[in-house]
Image 1 (cartoon, protein in one colour):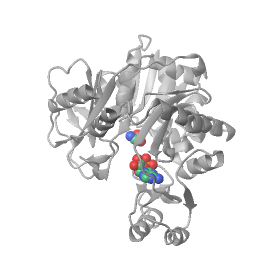
Image 2 (cartoon, protein in one colour; image 1 turned 135 degrees about the horizontal axis):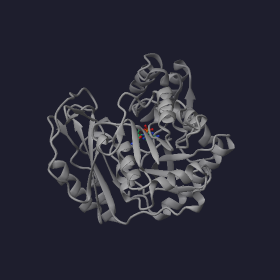
Image 3 (tube, protein in one colour; image 1 turned 45 degrees about the vertical axis):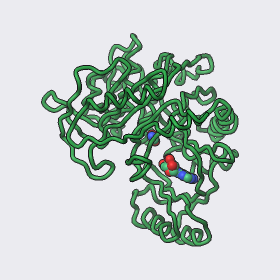
Length: 426
Ligand code: AMP
Ligand code: GLY
């Protein structure tokens, strides 16, 4: 079979590596892919993940048998709709279903209408009304741009003055462009955060192993928000009892709500949850695999990935058992110094001769230059280890991360520490 994966980060590398395990995969195209993915797939750097016309034309001309659309932008732009129109089976939600991520107003209104637990909120399309509301609010409070904003569209002002600035920067200065035409202002919740990715064909759902992201740039959860500096799976806060509550009050009701709204969700639905003292609440939905959650979740998947993705497309997921390995995985991101702010690129990367057998290095931001891998992005590599215990996985991931070098290499040193402490407290 000829497979095609849209995207070019660490998540896509993890998907490519897993698809490759199926002997039926004779070729995998990655559009655009990256320098490291080129070792596992045929990369097409000249076609970007948002070039929908070029993606469809490429898939048709090469006779692609199955496509996976991984990033949020092409999903929101209707890449899956267009591939389907061209007769190409693929994995991912159509544009209507992708609104669950691409519009926070849509997702918040969906949750309210169908009684799915989430933070209380108000929607504003006029700055004056938002500012008037804030004068009556208590702080901290949460201000979210409606649209896609590279994961940066959420601000948590601690005071009225900060909140006024947040509204002005999103709605008037359009810090996130048109994503800030409308905003959601919602109550500030507290509790451990859990990411749960789930395969769903619109009706049946197979939650994956839970995980924990580390979004802030600095140790001890300090500094700016990033795309994610590391992940661990499973998440020790997510007990079987909580998983059952989430299934009954969040996962199944969300699928039913999307069906009732005429936009059944097929693909990977990402539930960003907060385990508050009042119970689990949805913080956000994503319409795709998380990055870098995928880099710890897929290594623990025992069932063949391509078979699952095809069952989603064919709406036969109810008939397919999905199995997970015991044990744990940890991913440590190696970033360019300065990320998520300004950073330099083009730094040659050196690898040890071999990585331990339980370690995989997923490439996120590098390219080939004269046969050598050089850095080309903020998040450069995700070093994942899988092991019987989380402690061992962390030790092995950090040992491998130590052996990889490039100028300005930056990493957090406390990935998984909170999870370890929580796991031992139970
Ligand atoms: P999001 O982009 O929606 O995932 O939000 C980014 C981060 O902001 C989340 O991972 C949370 O840590 C935080 N956040 C979002 N909404 C809330 C909320 N209602 N209460 C507390 N923290 C929140
Ligand atoms: N790691 C968070 C995300 O993929 O949105």
